[in-house]
Image (cartoon, rainbow, N blue to C red; front, side, top):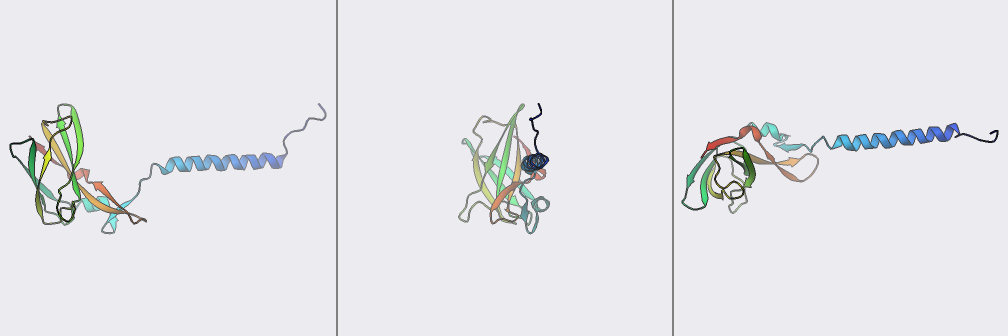
Length: 159
């Protein structure tokens, strides 16, 4: 019993410092997942650019499995594409819809385009649809672009 020795205070202190450092790194990595990348449009947060989005949509049936829609951009922000949420009963599904032209997918400010889309998928005959505009913004601090859905600018259409 006389020759048993404990841990030296220096080693114990070093182990405590390493333990605190490891725990701090784990908490930092966990908390970082809650903070998303900041997307900007025109040098401001992209949600402010969503306030300037204004568009109209008119649908008409062309007699096939595809329906036609005319999309008019009344705002001053180009719309990258649209997200269409189809609702039938208590079910819903969302899909991306792009208006394809020679220059890409963008619906420029003040322009209109007609595009066709298929109401296929799990909900082939929806009762209601909601069209959300998606705008393209740059990721702050990077040279990449990312689409952002303006959820507060959705247009509901009863079918």
